[in-house]
Amino acid sequence: MNHPYTVDLNCDMGESFGAYSLGPDEAILPFVTSANIACGYHAGDPAVMRRTVRRALHQQVAIGAHPGLPDLVGFGRREMAVSAEEAYDMTVYQLGALAAFVRAEGGVLHHVKPHGALYNMAAVNPILAEALAEAVYRVQPEACLYGLAGSALIEAGRKLGLATAHEVFADRTYQPNGTLTPRRQPDALLTDPAAAIAQVVRMVKEGRVRAQSGTDVTIQADTICLHGDGAHALEFARLIRATLAQEGIEVRPYQPATA
Image (tube, rainbow, N blue to C red; front, side, top):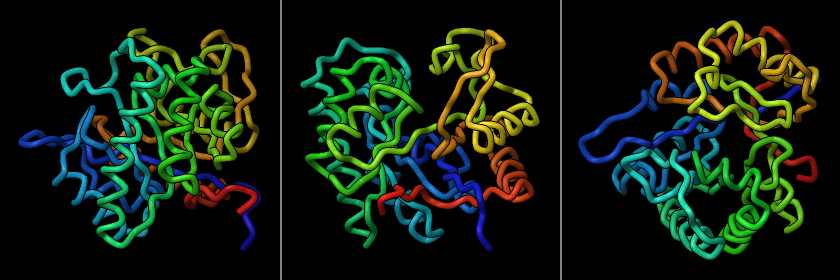
């Protein structure tokens, strides 16, 4: 059966650390097509990385590295004044760690998606975006770079010849310029599952999202992010997967058009 619409469903995973457990990763894996696995800076540790890679491969879920800022206490969601060179170095370091676990388990690293503040900083800072794209290009040039739809990170990856995937968010609200509403604002998250799913379907089928200002923003939806650390993450993953099927939207790992 040919589907006129296809989209990837990705989820941040492997964010437990030591004695601390975060997110029902194993339960969510059957409902997603890509897993972004923390690399030890904002979350994760070697044992968690290995287990998460192994579980993702078992479920035939595409594996991505999820590098972040070195901020375990802030979960990588606080901005840091890092230089482009520092961002490059920390990204290479984290990609190397996750890629080693993927290789050791017999898999292939499919994509790279920066985490949290690093992701948001690279979305609007071309110099930082170029540093992250360069790190991916040097370490794993065949990997796809996931970034905020229409952002500086996508443009930096495209200029280097990397495959890129425009990412949209199911549970976040948008600003008129296409950026996400900052988490520090009270209206940053969509807490109503029905509203979040309606937003996703519209982004995939119409290429538009309603901004907080009430205006429509044009957006490209190659991959949808589900946050695995929410209180109702599993229920939402199950619901969005079922709804996409009902809407005739095929869910599969992102494949560049040139592949």
